[in-house]
Structure formats: structure tokens, C-alpha cells
Amino acid sequence: MNLKKLYYAAGAGMSVMAGSIPFIAQAQPGRNPFEKAGTDLNTVGSTAGIGAATPLPQIIGNIINVVLGFMGIVLLFYLLYGGFLWMTSGGDSKGVDAAKTMIRNAIIGLVIIVSSYAISSFVLQQLLTVTS
Image (cartoon, rainbow, N blue to C red; front, side, top):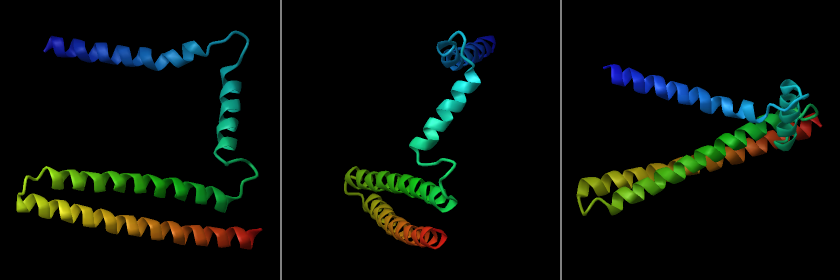
């Protein structure tokens, strides 16, 4: 039991040390870390297309695009996993049916995501046109 606690303590200590390495690496003399964080935050925001002059519908559109893109990637892996299950089912009818169901659901989900992307793109474009 004590060995288990020792492992937990060592893991926690290593996590704290690994988490503090970026602070040690950026500890430059004469530079305020809060100013650097603000500068980095502004750089990231402008790179992502989010700034003080960016309209709200465009920010929402960027967020929706990221979420839908992530969902598309998840469904791609779901589709690949269904194909993997089909290939490894070994001719078992239950395994093949489960894989077919998974592939069919992935394709239906992909159609839903593509159509929701098209609808949200159209609506946000119209919002930008109306507000401009």
C-alpha cells in the first residue's frame, strides 16, 4: 500500500516539475511575463481571425466551422473503425451486420454535418451581408 502512495507522490511531483518547465524556460530578466502573455494572446487572436474589429457573426461562424470540422474528423474515424470491424469480423454475420450499421450511421452523420455546414454558412453569410 505504501508503494502505491509512493508512486502517486512521484507522479504528482513529476507532473508539477513538467508543468513548471515552460515558466522556467521563459523566465527572462527584465521582462514581465504578463506583458508577454498579453502579446502572445493578441498574436494568437489575430492569427485565428479573432480581433477587436472582428464582427460577432464572423466569430460565431469561425467557432461553428471548427466544431463541424472536428465532428467530420470524428465521423471519419468512426467510418474507418466500422470498416476495420467488417474486415476483422471473419465472416461472422453478427459482426458484419454491426459493421454495416456503424458504416451506415457514419454516412448518415456525415450527410447531416455537411448539410448543417451548408446551412450555417448560408445563414452566417446572410447575417454578415445584412449587418455590413
